[in-house]
Image 1 (cartoon, helix red, strand yellow):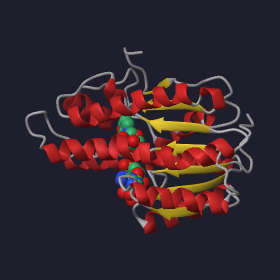
Image 2: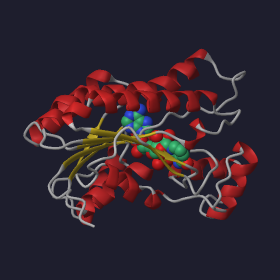
Image 3: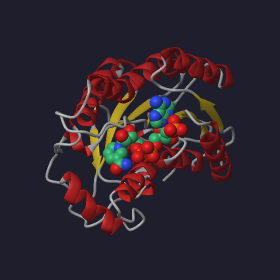
Length: 265
Ligand SMILES: NC(=O)c1ccc[n+]([C@@H]2O[C@H](COP(=O)([O-])OP(=O)(O)OC[C@H]3O[C@@H](n4cnc5c(N)ncnc54)[C@H](OP(=O)(O)O)[C@@H]3O)[C@@H](O)[C@H]2O)c1
């Protein structure tokens, strides 16, 4: 299916690795110009090489921390200069790193969860909006998480931040509907990204074995999917790419679970 992304201008925040990179690769394979944003130059350099190999005509890596509003403004100023003041696709794949029970978490950890999980996305969208509005068509996709729909006692701050992100995304879909800018959320289940494989290693499980990984997730988080294995970033990328594409002409304000099956809606 041609997604209509050829020469589209796209920014994937958190696109250096994991599901952000998998999404960026799908855009690149369809011919989009892709900028990936993250905090580590070396990670971005590697991602840019991958995207160029996949067919992106103008892949670039821009270093910035989403919690720094000024830095994100500079990123989108640069994107505007590069791509004639227009942006078709904004994907926010950054998530906070906040594990701990309600009783363990400090105020600083709660604030960090909301800074990384919500305010980072707010900074990106605010700075990107003039470029998105200038473009002939535009889409936003934000990453939430299935844990907003099924609680785990060790993820209250992460889950609260993701729930807030989902709510703000819904609000944005309403705000931007008159401009026909579609805003959607993807809620992954347990996906064997570098982050989750790192957690698996910390509990003595081989994160490269998707069946062992799902068993460990069931034990520690209580989030088993219907399918007996964890997903891979490559199973998320195509869904995000569709939502982010011109081909998505009538979905907005949706929260799409890509979680291997679950009881929640
Ligand atoms: N993996 C799962 O099972 C799972 C499940 C549900 C939801 N999610 C959500 O899905 C999204 C992608 O997850 P993932 O596991 O694929 O991610 P990941 O492997 O942890 O990658 C996250 C990317 O974001 C960048 N990043 C992190 N903090 C940043 C910041 N403050 N500013 C700029 N860049 C930042 C990282 O690069 P640097 O560190 O170099 O900046 C990295 O490239 C996240 O929002 C996550 O919360 C994941």
